[in-house]
Length: 139
Length: 91
Image (cartoon, rainbow over the protein chains, first blue to last red):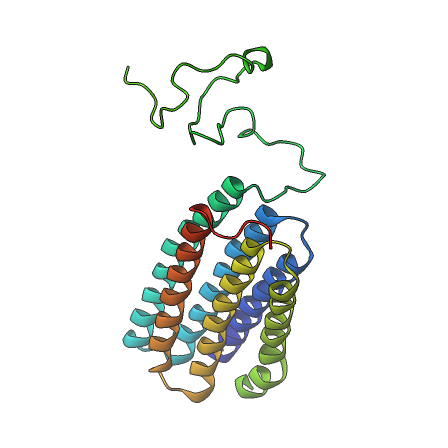
């Protein structure tokens, strides 16, 4: 019975990892690849750690596996956020079929400032009075 | 049963996943694609270490998995900071 549980966790975990690798290989651009690798890869590692817990059935195995799972759950989104942010700053090209890029009209590549209102295109020619300012002015 | 399953099914699946990630690592058009592939490979290696822990019934291998996960996270964040603050753009 326990063997069946361990086999189920192992199979589903390695299937998730295979799916993550397939997504990283086949998806078209950086954010979609990152989406496949972080979510499915973390899920695969978590399921395999669950298999470790059920294979040993000891408290020390549970503690170590829980530490690994907690670490993966905490760090995978942070790493994905850092990589995606760097990719958008550097200007890694998006896929041609991308239908929505909400940052493009709200985000200033020079000052790294993000505004909540869409900037009109006819004001692009005017020089912004505080264009050298890195932080938004205080309210 | 678990041993033969691990040898004949789980390890080939994880090895295939590592192979596909390394193809992306070699082909990736930008440096950040390679960083994503490296992070995925580290995640797969954590899984391989977990499977090896079950196969050899040695709990100490889990510490290796913790260290690999930690190094992979630090490498990904370090690479991202490096590229963001003026690394190579067109590779």
